Image (cartoon, rainbow, N blue to C red; front, side, top):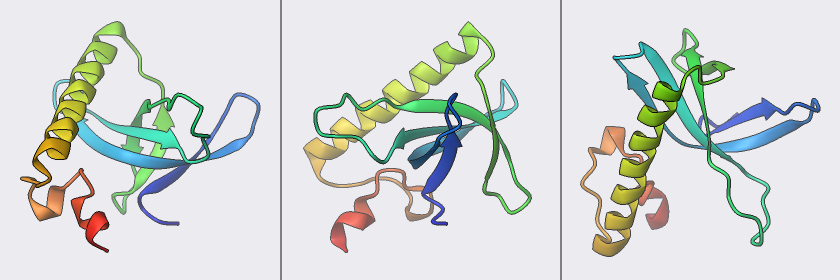
Amino acid sequence: MDENYLTVVDEDGNEILCEILFTFDSEENEKSYVFYVPVETSDDDDIEVLCSAYQPDEDGSIGQLSEIESDEEWDMIEEVFNTYMSNMEDMDDDEECDCDDDDCCCHHDEEEE
């Protein structure tokens, strides 16, 4: 499977294909996190961005997902997401990316294809 996607299982046992927005590591919490959105949403749906902690597999891919454990963790995650969204808005305004090519999370290179 493409490394930009993951499959999650909802509480009813349904598999849902999700696109990975970005991942990040928290040294403070000693955890890795992934932000993702379900692929199949209609234009009328509000897009729900989901976040989970995860344990990376040996090959570096996203392994087992786990729930966020505390309000402090959610506060940190919200701050990271707000920074991401602010950077994305700035990107839309500037139409240029200042990410390193290896660590780019804004998908600027996908628009050129």
